Image (tube, rainbow, N blue to C red; front, side, top):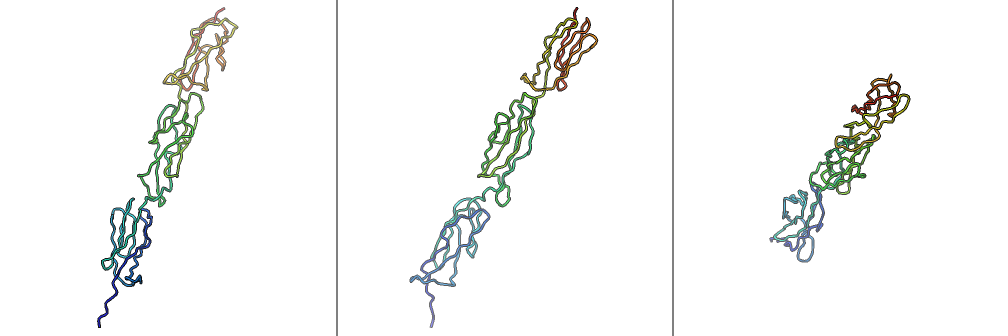
Length: 265
């Protein structure tokens, strides 16, 4: 007598839905039952994916995430089918690193920063959105592409700002130091000038950068071409010693300016 197997009436896939990261796997199970709802074992099941660019499935029901999106996985046995919906997600960002770090840029100059984004598996990913911010945009502002524009630093002390790149809640930062604008011109006034023998004359100096911005807080040294006729102190005060003409020079960061001073009776 020939025994005819009870035919498969339904196929159910478990779990019915699942989220899978790209490169990760999810095992699905196909449960075959007869018309009375009794589980049937040992039945041949074939597997297929509606979108192999999103997820593939092996002969044993192991799904592998390939690319972001949604795929329907189908299990078929004796002409009956069951499905599961698989959503494939990008692996979340794990770290964000900003380079160079630390960084230095001159006053009113620009500097390009780069952000390296890695996922939680340590793989560099280039398809994530990165936002940039500065904790002090007056010192150093940053564009949406990581281009830093340094503010004008007229004083003699460097200023710093922290630039941060953020992606999916993860962030990395660098400290950008803006160095002072260098002295381009030194102007001494009055020039020419005169001072009586035995009297004092205060000279002033104006420092400008290459763009004509006034600079402050810089070291200035003073000198006289002939101290037997006139001396000058560290504050630019000229003292007339003897009648005649001298050149008083102010120097800052290698740039010089002069005033011709005549000592009179």
